[in-house]
Image 1 (cartoon, rainbow, N blue to C red):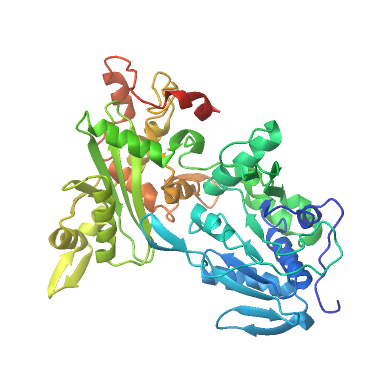
Image 2: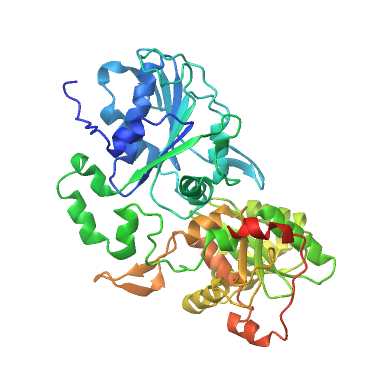
Length: 495
């Protein structure tokens, strides 16, 4: 159509492969500039055309991100003659054939474990989530959104492979990451493609014996026909080593420069029910040591984490709170709620030393945030050790593999000393994006990047009074067989 940019789909290309997907969940991943956003937008526009009267959603982590990036790309490819109206206030697009599309954001509403997505009031024929790996988007957003794909608009095209109604499809665009996207979606898919094994997280229809998810991914180079001539050259000068593998080649294992490269989701993250039951079972026989940490933020998230130390020196992060732009009263409520769930009372929280200096005027008194927490809510906080490098070194030791140490659940040897509940998705997201900074010569410096590090700081605070892992290993008098009822799960867990 005259006046529109040219969207080239070459036979066998990433775009071609994505356009031919027909599964419930259609995932477009890979390197920077490989056409993820444009490809998903073009396919969504095609659905609006072929399913008159359908209703869809284009979503991102925040409203500014969706309006300044994804929505802009969407309108770039949308023929203007198809548009009937666009309500800027509600960000609602209506086409002349009656199809509609809302541009919005994803967020969990509520508190604690009782949260719901902000999109649960709507029903969609299709939905698109761009940059699904963004830290604010969690696995429950994904599952909640799947439950809203209930539309029944009729197909008017002539492609026999298309669903007759709906189509009730979910498009996901993503750069390689190590958070829930990899653990819950990509890794199970990769295992199935390589071995044919159906793991618990694989999105698979057992009644029809077919996958409900397909993944198209590729490098930036595969989209060379749709990017400016100097785009790839610029990226090649910017990224080297494993960063190049990740951001240009689109490889999921490219993580050079991570502060904690030894952290492994399959090894360090355990099912929440396992850790919770282990904790309550231990309390029947031992005086379990509780460790808590807190990092305060206003424009950035505040983070609170609760964990415990088992008799064999393992640290297990049980639960936590992670939210921004909340007053002290709300934060205190979340801390008390989490503590109550696990029977924790009157313990000391190791906190960011800055909160003992940060003051707030309350009832004509100038109080520190720590004072308010104790005075109004009986939450006692004490300053944590805040030396960044020594804290990172200590945490690294707990993540490292110890040959003669056992996993507290499976009893397998070659295990680390630190484990995190899979309920703490914010932790997994942060640690997968926690990198060392670089200097002007592109060399790494001994300082982590000062962003999205609130859970990482909280973890360091929690370990303030814990010994270095080398001390624990030297002090072991004997090897112990850890009593557990999960013995029968050893083989499954180890795969």
